[in-house]
Amino acid sequence: MGEESTRAEVDPLGGRGGRRTIRQMVVVGLIASALGIALGLVIDWFPTNGSTQADKIDTFWDVLIICSVPVFVLVTTVVLFAVRDFRMRPGQEHLDGPPIHGNTKLEVVWTAVPAVMLVALCTYAFITLHDIEKAPAAGIERQITVTGQQFTWQFTYNEGGKKFTTAQLYVPKDESVKFNIQTRDVLHDFWVPAWRMKIDAVPGIQTHYRVTPTRLGNYPVVCAELCGLGHAFMRQTAHVLSREDFDAWVKKVTAPAPSAAAGGAGGGGGSSAAVDAKALFVQGDANTGAPGCGSCHKLADAGTTGGVGPDLDTVLKGKDEAFIRQSILQPDAVIAPGFQGGIMPGNFAQLLSQGQVDALVKYLEEVAAK
Ligand code: CUA
Image (cartoon, rainbow, N blue to C red; front, side, top):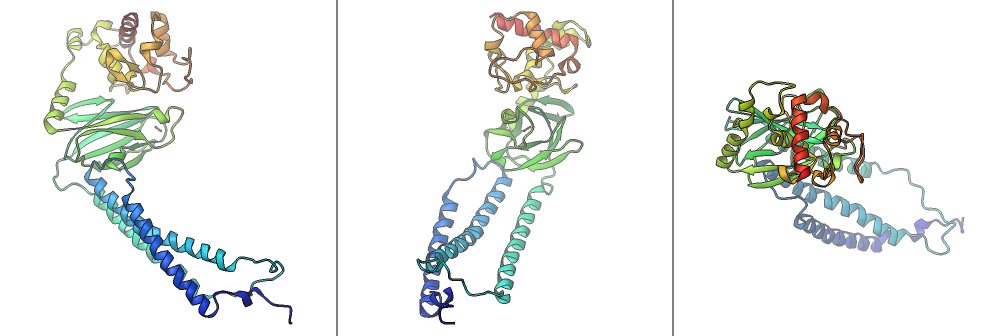
């Protein structure tokens, strides 16, 4: 039995040395937790906080930091002290630790404590989400339908009985908005980081969330679900305006285009003069769901800045009518250097009338010749 010593005999946690080690661990753990929490709260994790919902979510985040840092510190401290005190020393290679047959009390504690923490945090998360999602007290709520499509967002409004669709999001400050989110093709995810809220656009159903913007300015609208080659470029802008500016914007957007009034109900195949090509380029056609070219293409004349597809100010220079028409109707026939095929929708022949295509081609030809 003499040489059958085990490593238990060199266990530094036995006796007074062990108590000292535990005291050291508690002190190190408390200091590390305090520093970790302070650091976690000082770091600016999120972009500007721009909605009433964001306040609740930021508070929730802080609570999560305060609860999770000590857990991380506890585990790390125990591991580091174990490495220091129980590591194998020269000459102990053949020794074995003492046999362990479980410790019921310890196992109950380390199961129960995390379980209680998890249930408490889940309850808090549920309450936060429920508060955010329940109907606003004011009762008046604007509904905006958000439609995702590879690779752009469209926003459909119903203001004073007038329905219209735009490529950029405009909302008034301090008024609740309910977004109804849908998709024409694959999964997307509608996210405005400044508002914190985020939800998938799921084929076949509508999803919803509410936001009350509290800060004027422009904020990115991001697609947060990998949806194809153009996913990273599926970005637009949310403009939060004062009530007056918003009303003025609605008035401007819903004002009948002068050329459309002149052309009358020409319909498909009508003369291209009846189509406001620049407006079509910027906004697309809400009736058929044709996205605006400007969502993806930069064109100085139309004031668009999209970066998904080629810069039309450059690639259309000196191109003729046939090339422009082909680029709209068969986008993959010629791929601009530095870009990939399969990104631009190939169904504009179905989404646009002959008259609309003619007008777009004519407009782009004129711009390209400038
Ligand atoms: Cu749409 Cu990613």
